[in-house]
Each structure stands twice: as C-alpha cells, then as structure tokens.
Image (cartoon, rainbow, N blue to C red; front, side, top):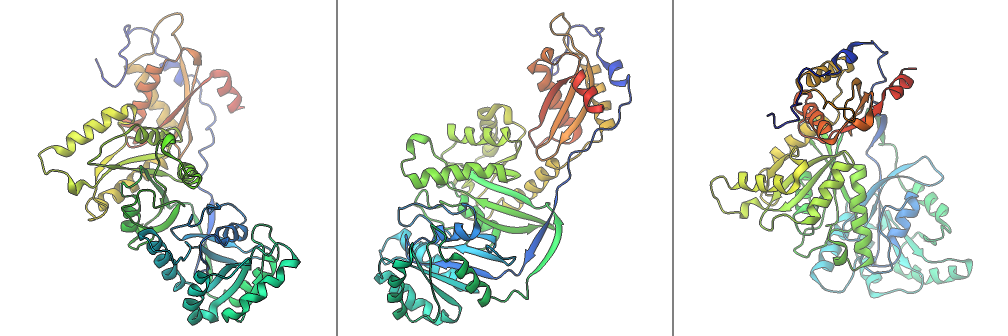
Length: 486
C-alpha cells in the first residue's frame, strides 16, 4: 500500500488516461505575472512628533488618506515608529511619513522605551511636525519643545484640534514656544490640512528623489505568533537595527512595523505584528485592533513565519494562525525560537519537529527550523528557507507537463470504481501563482472524493516542485472546461 494515496482495488478499471489525450485544447492563459510597480528612493522623511494623545496618528492617517496607524482615546497607543510612503494630498509630491510614540514625563519602563525611540527618530527627519493640542500647553509639550529647538530649522509647530475658526485664537498661545512657523489644523476633520501640506512641500528638497520600475519580486514576510515569543527581536535581527521595541512586557508591539533587508540579491520585506492571544484574553480595545491588524497582514504577505517559544511549546492559537495562513495560500515556516535555552540532548530538535507536525496534521509540508533570534543562530537558514518557499510560490508549470504528470498519476492509482464514484479526468491547468492553484476538469466533479484529491495534492507537491507550500486544487465539470476553451 502506498502511503501517499489510494491504491484502487481494480487495476483494470478505466483510468481516464485516454481522456487526457483525446483533445489538444488551446493553451489556457498563464497565471498573471507580478505587476510592475514604481519604487522610490531618497524620499524626504517627515516625522510627526508630540506628547501622547494630541492626534499624531490621526494626522498621520489624514495625510496618508487611509487608516494605517491605530487611533484610540487611550494615551500611548502608538509605541513603535510606523512609517509609510505618502503622496501628500492635493500634490504629486511623495514623502516617507513617520508616526511616533508619544513623549511623556511619566516614568515607567515602557514610557522610557517609547520616548527614547521617538526622540531618536527625530534625528533621521528632514522635517518634523511638532503636534500640540489646542486645548492647553503641558509640561510634556515644553519638554519636547526644548529638545526640538536645536532642530527648529526643520520643525513646523502644528496646533491640532482647532475644529473651527473660533478656536484659532487658542493656537496663538503656543507662539511662545519659539518656533517660526505655526499652523492650526483639525486632523480629525481635515481643516487647514491643505495649508499644512503647502508648508511641508515648501520646506522640503525633492531634488534627490529617484524612481525605478520593477516587478513585485520582494519577499513579503509576516512574523506572527503569541505575545513575547521573540517576533520583534527577529525583526530587529533581520534588519540589523532596532526597528521594533523589545521588552519583557507582553504586548509591546501594537502597530504593524515594517522594514526591508536583502539576502543573496533578493529584497525581503518583513512585517512585525502584535502578539495574537485567545479572544477571551483580549481586554483592551487597542489590543483588539492590534490583533485584527496582525491577522490582516496575512493578506499582505507571501510567507508567514510562525514564532513558537521552544520552551513553552504549542497552543491551539498557534494552530489557528497556521490554518489561516494555509487557507489564504501563504507560505508557512515554523520557527522554534529561543532554541538556545533548550537542553542540548541528542535528537531533541527531531523530537520537537515530529511533535509539531503531529499537532498540525495537514501542514506537514511546512518547514520547521530551530532559531535563536536573540543570538542570531539559525537566522541564515531561515533566510535561505524564505527564498526557497518564495521560489515555489511563484513557480509555474507548463500545461503540457502538468497533464503528462496527471496521466501518470491516474495510471498508477486509478480513481475508485463504482456507479457513484466513477469519474474521468479530462484536463488540468495551473490557474494561479502565489497562491499556487490548480484546476482539474472532470466528468463528474461531485464524485471526486477527498482522499483522491489529497493523493493528487501530494503528487503535485512531491513531483512538480511544490513540497514546501500549500496547494489549492479545484475540481470543475467538463462543460466548464469547454466554456473556458471557447
């Protein structure tokens, strides 16, 4: 008995082989190639800075014209700097816009981390939008103003929450902070944002911006997992910089933090996400939005790296994340992080890998790697694996080769025989890349059982070079095939 698929009880039964050869249909359209896009270099960096809850993320989203940063009345929602390419509203000028965490005088480990990261980001800015709240000047505003005075030549003071002309008078009280340029706006309602954009454009040098057309050939990788499994540590290790906050405090990352690196000539874009916990453990609205945003990154990535604490082992939540990735057709790599803390026993990794594959059942194709994001061990192998998985996600099989392979598989293991289970395979085509999908045209789609589909999926993976990724396999009727040909 072959473990890869059904054997078939009657070898002499019709296999459908003659049906695969009976016609020579017109070659179906190949899966769409990645669309060309423009990549911009040397964009001016515009940083939005201020104390907590003055509306930095609201202004960031207003200029970006989409909800990228999380906004919430709770102070201190933004922790990591969040950046995005932005075409300034009403112009064709493009900048790199950065939202920062609030600078606060309240002392705590987290507040200190956020404040230091925010201030460090200012040094990279070509222009700083110093945001304050029209309703009052606070000691935190004055503290940040003191730090910004030596950067006054590249700072615009933006007084937010001036929702009507009557409130413009409140903005004048901030003139004593000593900045030469002041704009009163309402980020929430868009009031005077066009004037702010004019000031931004006037203060920046766009002469060094360059662009080039290229294919979407970067590998987009989302790092997902439970809180405190080392996701941000891995991001920082891959990028070679402290892009994401790292803390023993679970749930440090809230927004999706993005950065890029290059490995063996291939650009890899990495997305660090909020830790995903069970619903009943998610209490704060902010964490709810963070978790949902992390889940949505599965839509935006090519490969999910599922971080698992090697000491703590597996959870049902890990299984749900992995199932979501496979459902969307994304590549999936299991990273057993903190492996440096595991006992140095013979075959310990093999035992952990086998346990994980048993736990995840139908995801045995997904690679499993030991890793120490903190020490850097295993990271080169992870990068090599990401390139290998991406290569399979974008692999295209010629239709003639595919149908020849299907002929051989059907001949080796014919479909079941019986009045309700008999069917003939007419034709096969690869219908998509990244995610990889195939279509089988058959005489009776409803007669194709799950066991036979599993057999065909396993053969596609093992024989056609898709051993590391999920494969979608759709069954359609012969009439659909004829309509597609027409």
